[in-house]
Amino acid sequence: MNELDARVALTVARKFTPLALRNLFQRFGSAAGIVGAPKAELSKVPKVNREASGALAEVIRKGEHLREMESADKAGVRLVMLGEPEYPQLLTRIEDPPPLLYVRGTLHADDTLALAVVGGRSASYYGTAQASRFARDFATRRVTVVSGLARGIDTAAHRAALEAGGRTIAVVGSGLLDIYPPENDKFALQIAESGAVVSEFPLNTPGVARNFPQRNRLISGMSLGVLVVEATLKSGSLITARLAGEQGREVFALPGKVDSDLSEGPHALIREGAHLVTEPAHVYDELEMLKTLPQEAAPNSASRNGPQGLTSTEGALWNVLLPSDGLTPDELAGKTSLPVAQVAAGLLTLEMKRLAKQLPGKRFVRLEL
Image (tube, rainbow, N blue to C red; front, side, top):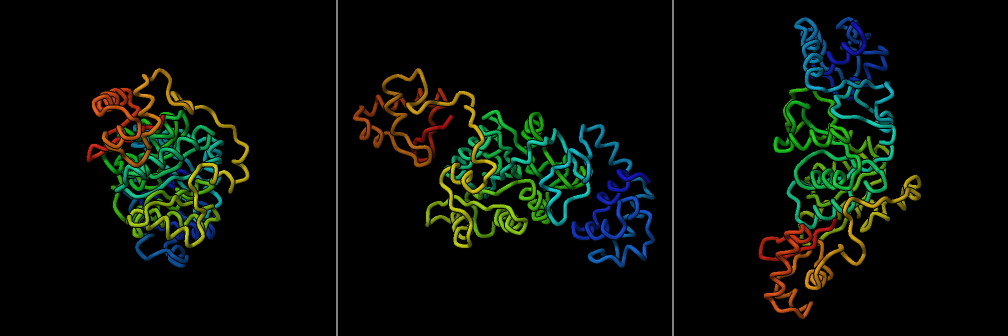
């Protein structure tokens, strides 16, 4: 059996933990060597459970690894082995890198300049706005944005990176033919057009809870640092942050409101020594290789005086609207000295131009471009 066939068989067997695979490769030198080893020898390797060798033999007997490779080829999914040039260099430095990655899209050498943006699925508008702000700035400096394609913060970070014309990599906790969450299936294809969607799980693996802690080590492992934006104390984002610290990566946390559950995670990380950041520049200050990267203008970006072509009413509203905390029309009328009816009309045109957004409670925020 050749090396690629053997690595696919090990993956499809689903009985070998990342640490077990590491120990097996150290003992036998290659996947082909592992597959060819006697069952009794496999069982002697630390972290290898008794069922693993039998499951591997059954996969090979049934030809499941060959069908997996055929399915990957038909779906346009590439199989990238640890040791090949395309394999992410940062990931090779962690304790237990996957011997095989499933990749839709492309991985570049420039992806060594990567930062992860992660956070809770039930994010507030503040959280998604801030995740977008940081991811957008990273992308304009040609830093690859890594995240997990989850609802909330992850999706906001991926989307902002794409909108800024940058690269983003989604590391998923499911197989690439069973994307989780399912509503991001088409978005994953969009990410793959200019970046990559990556998994270490077989193609049709569902996105079950036990997969995500394992997935999280890849998010941190592929990044120079991890930024946590809004997360409860039980959020998987804190697992990613802990793994980042163990892998020697920098950990950053964005503070939030002290009475919000979504702030408890970042605040706990800050107490434990994570870097408190409120601006992208704070991240660059901690990473020497990012300090001198030039910033490129994002598509359709606004000047410091606001977007071009605004009416006087729209400009006055733009200047007082905030990106996170919503203001009511009455509050805006007080701040601009404009009649409420004129404020309402101005807000409507700003919404049509996608420069403002109405939140619940008829509160309006400015949309950053």
